[in-house]
Image 1 (cartoon, rainbow over the protein chains, first blue to last red):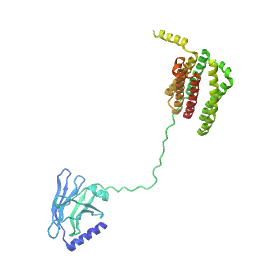
Image 2 (image 1 turned 90 degrees about the vertical axis):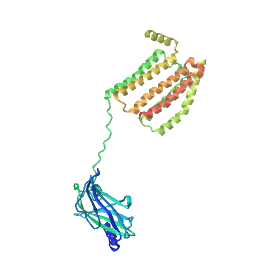
Image 3 (image 1 turned 60 degrees about the vertical axis):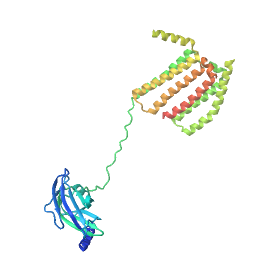
Image 4 (image 1 turned 180 degrees about the vertical axis):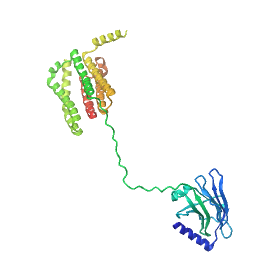
Length: 270
Length: 109
């Protein structure tokens, strides 16, 4: 409605001053392949003799120019093609583009109308709306044209909650049979028996510990404490307390180990 | 032919290798056996939980490497190259094990 008010104002200016005239108006319906299904040249105020049909493969093309009262070509500030639905009154407006030789061209396809009005086939009143700040304006009713297509209802926004999202979490890992795990635990522990047996066969023993009993036992106890600390960390102790205990044990372990191993070096050289 | 080579190798090993090195070799064989068994379990039953497998297998590999280092340093034939006492190498061995098993217990999860 606002647009028509502006066009009306331009038209009134034109009526009042009547200084812009449309020239070389040619209305065509052209196949995309190039063939013209409908073509008619018009001179204001003549209208179309027939009703062309605008299809997706055959858009409406309007070529025109403009001249002022002095007959000279005018550079338009407003060059529009208006299509108004005969039944609903809905209007779609398309700007024409400058072409060669001071002419203008507007091309209108059903998809262009759909962008503005939605799917609305039917009969439309076609008009040329020209305007110039210097020379005034003109609204030239060209005639009527049919726009082909299927009427589709405009999509209505569905307001409401979206469907519930159902998270699909990762499936829990398939664990082997407990018997398999126990069997392999026993198998992994079995080489320890083999190691102890091999050491026994080799004659590995703790007889030499008697030569430096206190230091050796203390050193082994402190190393065992470290291993117990590692096991306790796995079970429950947190990192920082564990590091504190490790630090506390470090100096005694170093000193005791240094003493015990130095004594062993001494009596091994005896 | 191959059985003769193996037998000769075994006799030479038994006669020329000090008792201390044989004890370390037995420990290294133990580490290999434990690592292989853990790998076999992983292949058969899957990697879950992967962190536990890495901890156990890493422990076996780490222990093997430290034992190899101890063996090299305590071999009398390498005394000229390394110079230090076997007890010093043992102290390093113990320290490395302590550090390794803290990392392993952290990884066990």
